[in-house]
Figure (cartoon, rainbow, N blue to C red):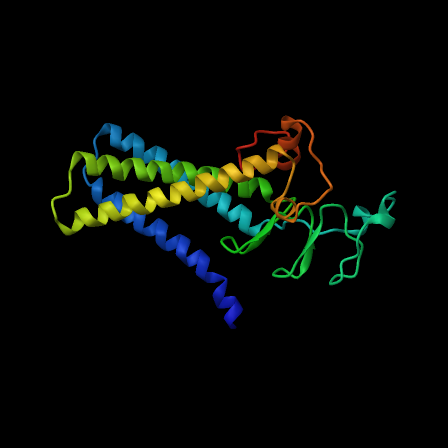
Length: 225
C-alpha cells in the first residue's frame, strides 16, 4: 500500500473516530434512560443509520463519466472543449478530476471525506448525507447540552468529557449547517461548486422547483434512494 492509498483513509478514519467517541459518551450518560430518553435515543440512531447509508451510497456510487452518446448529435459540439487529459469532447458542465483521473458529468467537487467525486449520479446521496449529518449533530449537541444543564460541572473528569462532547458536536453542527446552506443555495440557482467558484458565464438557472428536480430528482428530495 503506497502513501496515497494510506492518505485517503485518513478522513474516513477521522469520521469513524468522532462518531465512535460521541456514541461512547452517549452510552455513558444514558446508562439508565427513562422513557423520553429512550425515544430520543431511537430517533438519534435512526438518523445515524440514514447518515451511514447516505455516506455509503455517496462513496460507492459512480458520479458519472461521459460516453459517446453524451456528445454525439449535439448541435453545440463544435463549441465544446476537449479534455486535455482524456482527449475527448466534454459535455456541458463536465470537468476533469485529477484525483480520480477522469472526466465527471456535472462535477461538483472531489470530496476526500467520502473518497469520491460528487457528480451527476451521486449528488443526491451527498446532499442527503450533509442534511442528515446536520440533524444528527443537532441531536448530539442537544443531548449533551441538556446533560450539562441538568448536572452542572463539578470538577470530575467525566464532566470535562461531556463538556468536550458538547463543544465538539456544536462545532460540527455549525460547520455542517453552513455547508448545507451553501449547497441549498447552489441548488436553488442550478449551480455546482466548481461553477460558483469559477464564476462561469453559462447559467442553467430555472425556477427553484425545477432546479431542485435537476439535482435531486423528481421524487422525494430527502430520501437517499
